[in-house]
Length: 189
Image (tube, rainbow, N blue to C red; front, side, top):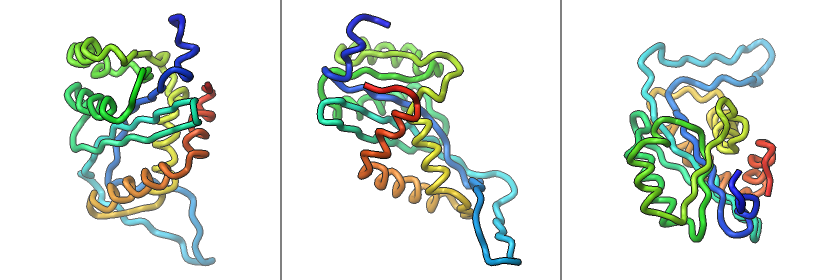
C-alpha cells in the first residue's frame, strides 16, 4: 500500500464500485406456504431480458457517513459507461476520493485511465484477484437479490427494476445496513 492510504478515511471518501446484472429469471429462495400447497414459480423458459447495474458504496469516517449510488443500463458495462458513472460520482462526492474496485478490463481501459489523469483528486486502488468478498458492494447485490427480488417472477423487466430502485431507496435510509456491508467484507476505518 502507498503511504497515506491508511488515513484516507479521515481526509476523504472511500468508494467501492462493482457491476452486476438483473434479469427476468427469478431469484429462488426458501419460502413458506400453507401445508399441502407447494409454492410454484412459473418463469419464462428462455430469452430473459437483462439489465446491467453499476453500484457504489461511499464511506466517509468523519460523521460516519455512507452513501449508495446506482446506475441501471441495458447491455453490458463498457468503458464509456464507467466514465459516465465516474462523472456522476465526481459531481456528488466532494474532496479526496479513493476508488476501490476489481480488475475488470473496462476499469483498466485507456479511456478510464485518461479520466483519472484529468481528475487528480481521485485515486484508484484495485482489489486482489479472486477476492469479491472484500468488496462491500457484493453484499449490497446479495441483499437486493435476496430480499427485494427473492421469489419474484415477472414477465417483464420493468417491475424488477422498480423493485431494485425501491430496495436501493430503502437501503439508503439504513446507515446500519450500509456500514454492515463494510463490516461483512472485513474492512473498516
